[in-house]
Amino acid sequence: MDFDLPLDEARVYRPPLAVPDDLEEFWARTLARIGTAAPTFTRVDSGLVAVETYDVTLAGFDGDPVRAWLHLPASSLRAGPLPGVVQLQGYNGGRGLPHEHVFWALAGYAHLVVDTRGQGSGWTTGATGDPAGSGSSQPGFLTRGVEDPETYYYRRVYADAVAALEVLRGHDLVDPSRVAVAGGSQGGGISTSVAALAPSSVAAVLCDVPFLCDFRRAVAVSPAEPYGELVRYLAAHRDRVEQTFATLSYVDAAVLGRLATAPALWSVALMDLTCPPSTVFAAYNWYGGPKEIEVYEFNDHEGGEAFQQQRQLAWLPTVLGA
Image (cartoon, rainbow, N blue to C red; front, side, top):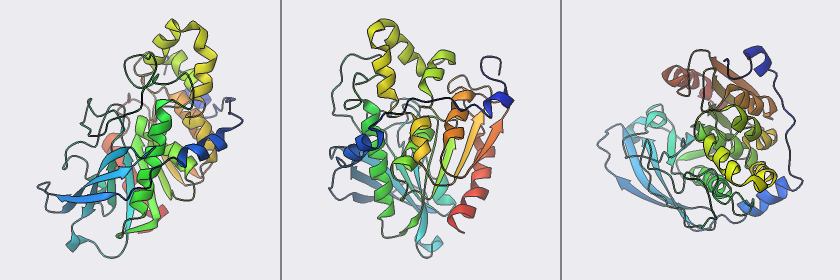
């Protein structure tokens, strides 16, 4: 970890973070703008016989439509209300094709795979646009609307994720007291923030190699994308540095995570150039709920992959109940 802190220092790294005075009021106003239209569920044939899949449209921020897949264990394989997992996507990934992300359904959970608005043209496809406008920004999503917290892109993304959580909790086949949020990279940062924004609704968090944490340090030490979008933006807009970081403080998972209460299982990769380990530990060390972290010493941003999934399969039932 030559580019970052040694592990013993990272484990105790708890930087002073700028917390906006109106953080909770801002997010209360934001979540009040989630749409009220009822979600729709349309059965689709994924070609898989052990999983039932539904095409979901739900109302996100300002009522904008957000797409998702709901995967359920086949009716012959389920009994009683199901625990649930809301899966949030990594940067520029989408919900994918109906058969792509069914891991948690195969493990016996109701599995909601949620698009990130405007994304889904990178490693998996998406079907959700972002109708809101933006001022000048770097290619990508990290600087869209960053001039002001009210217009910032991730304000809408986080609200969409909270809306998706409530949709899964409200499904007839789901036990609303046993729903987890999960994701890696961008999805990890979003999951942690959702746990902070809806603490009474989240029963557990699975957070892997999270993005969107400790922005000041991330842009100082990460040589990779997507944090490079911020570096280039600030190199051009030399007069916007402080305002940019003020906006980012409203969505920083290390800032928001202090408000979370759900048990959480984290992972970090010590050779991660995309989401530097110190930024992950910053968010982990500030996280407000019970927590554990798995450290993958020789991995880059891929993190623990199947090994971490195996750890999650064992851990989640201990929190949600078998």
